[in-house]
Length: 586
Image (cartoon, rainbow, N blue to C red; front, side):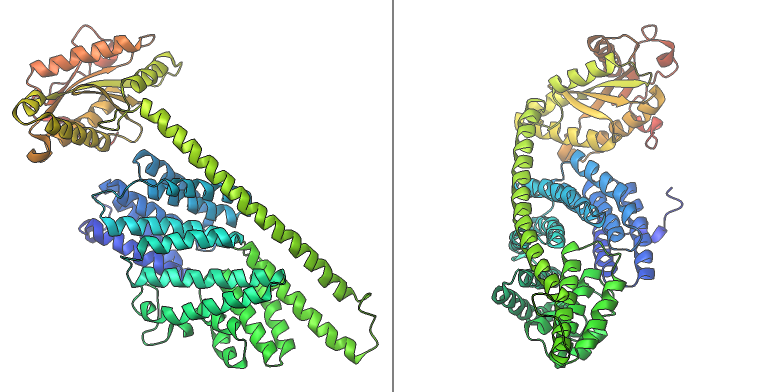
């Protein structure tokens, strides 16, 4: 694969790759369809490069970017599902709590597009439960990067809540996102936060109007308009595609809509007309259209306003990204139709108000809106209940995990290993299982010449190195002291040797100040039919001592004559050069 990748991309740093992905994500959300497809292809190339490098956090970031690009590109949403599933599995395996929450949030976004709103709410409850109990910032990330990750996950949760019209919960989440980055946010983060809040306030205001709470709605519109004025400075330095020197309100539809909804007037019509065709999310276009229609009505052009709304309804008929916004459009049409009908009544012999079909329809719509408002309150209660359930489940799972986890290295402990190995031993599957017992060469000297604290640090480094060097499905457990056991499912002896060789080489290559020169002696065997867990570990232990006697820093299989034909052809003695058997992932 290395020969096929773009050579210039392979020379770029991890920081450059991550920065480039951020730029592309900003661009893909506000560009035309052809460019969105090109951006998606570029992100796929970046993802492939990060998979080759194998750095867990970087891989998770690119999985998110590739999945998100598909969610916002027409016709590609279904392609996001395997990427988001991979992101969830990957982040769970590597303990990346914030990005794991983000994976749930993005899955919620996909479910909204599929009109599975209840399932989407469950995904957001899972995401928020993880974020409610978020661990302390990881030292290697730095505070600013950690805050940015937290804000990103919260923003993705907010998007789904806003799409569903659960505005009170959305307000709580976006406030947390703002708090996460208020001390370290750059221009792009500030712009994104303000634009998101403007969009939410406009949707919230329209929703309040639908239940007759017009004063509250007007306050939401006015607050959104004040935020629009505040966004100008940061927008000029953001990552969003923009025209230099042109005010943000002339380039971004939702910003122009906020000024128009706060004070509908003919002065806004020309600007809104230009922005109705801008590239962006369909539900943002509906906000612009509604604002334009109200300005047309304010200018006495009711028939033109009706045509504008009808065109938008036809154009956005297939959009499922924001159910509440579609209802806002229908409500606008119904209200305007009622006004036009009143004009007609005044000019002709029309039925009385009690008999007028349009008036009856409006009364029916009002009653339905009241019912929907009650359902929305139930939706908030459901979200909170599921969020608490997920939090308690996670807490219970953490307690259970602690009983099965080595506290020093965070690897599975002896008890967890015994359970897994017994399960493999009693399985009827014909798939091979390779088992390796690993002992550290020179570890006693670390404790004797330095300290037990230094010894613990070495064990943690070796544990992390083993986990990263092996295959995704391999299981690394701490067996006790300075011994580890590795289970390699579905791996023949030769395939397992390749994986274990990478681990031996990786530990031997660690900087001296981290490893204090320890290396690995590995005893490798293959589980036999009907063999107990104790028996296979005993054979692996014997093989490990064989590697020790040969000088360590090598792999040995079971002593000759003690194993079956499967292993006899695969006995290895690598001496002090474990790279002799090195290879790629089997």
